Image 1 (cartoon, helix red, strand yellow):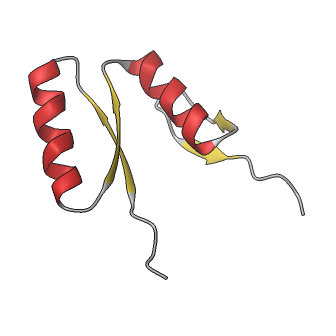
Image 2 (cartoon, one colour; image 1 turned 90 degrees about the vertical axis):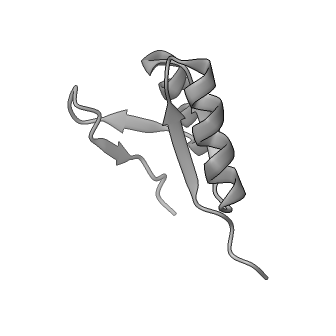
Length: 68
């Protein structure tokens, strides 16, 4: 069984730049989540990776893992 690809979140408010970055990363085997701004990025992370909480405004992530 092959390992699942690494997921990278690409955030850029310029659609052409977002497209080219995402395309490049996809060609190199990465799974890419795209967002055009901060709120959309947070929404993508939540919908893809599940519950998370944020320890500070600088977006240091601390993932909440359910017990068991």
